[in-house]
Image (cartoon, rainbow over all chains, first blue to last red; front, side, top):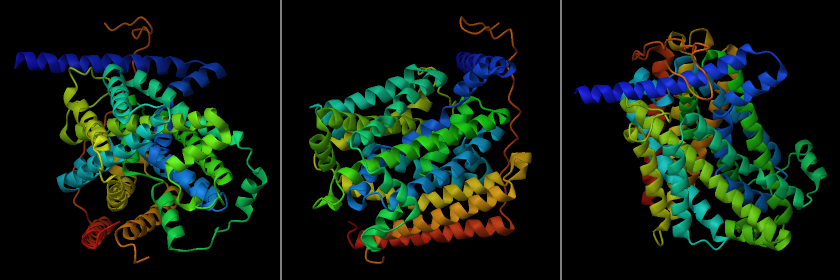
Length: 447
Length: 59
């Protein structure tokens, strides 16, 4: 008993020391004057928002945007992606305030405020959806690395190794900084789009002449629903709120958290636009381009941009899978820790926080194994992710809005009327689109 | 005393985050209760759709 108490005390002290060090650094920067210090403060406080938004451009996202550009060109989806960026910002900004005010993660808030039923419901949905989404990340990693001749077994092992080492060896601040460097790789699609010399006039005119290429039909509706419906994934709410809490942000840091989220949204939109414009320029209009898979697209990029272009595209895909795997793994660990009251911080050394780290890493290992199983029903699993997300998303958004309007816990930081108006409109739109998307996946003949 | 090579944290005392309000489970009333029922109905409808979809060979 004494040994256990000592271990628990040491654990708290380790975490407190790291947090005190971070807080001292932030306090010193905050009390300093001058633009250089202000910029340094911003650099110190950004992280969760950029990470969550870049990780949303995951391997599945890269594939979807690339296929959308190939099938529909750049007409309709350019403005739609920009609107998606605003939607993502509005929703994720609420998680920043909730985390900074309550110092509790999303799972802990649902569990504590709405009881075990909704707690279990959210946790099971989140964990299952995260495992299934991780499968798509490992598909992206293995497909991308195959361009360099790396067998899937080694790619998957490499992905697991990077994910595990980053999570277990680094403490929160270093984990966040290394993840941000990896996230920077997502921007590789921007120089790639410049290499294809797109018709920028066509890109600009997409905003003034919002047209539906090929007319409105069930297939097009499906793509619209896929793009809008997955703008915000449930894991994003859990990830950013827990990340804000683990980073130790307080109400004084909300402004920087909002800037962080805005920068992330901007980067997410820029990369998504780059992908649609890239394949919209390279592949749209080709015979059969509406049914191109990611291998077709990589081959086409290679034909048109040479080996360098192809390698960059493949690296972007690998990076997208890797950064999303890092975020999803952490999100599972945080949610489990919050739900069961375990010590829950990336500041914990692995030998003290193994219970916290294990669920996330286990989910990544399971996903990597599934990808390596010959003839695994990957398409079916992908559909299941969408179905689960479409069921879970309205619940997650409803809890978010209820919490943001709960004066008992939010105090003066509750949503203002205009924020509620925006939030309810977005939630209403996302609920309808998620519902329709779920139905279109489950009952394709209905729509 | 906690000191590190990079930042002397004894120079500036760490700012303690505000005390987190204690979480108390709420009993949904009024519009919140309605929202929870709406959510339950949505979930049941979606689960029925999943069952129908899977029984007809979801693709």
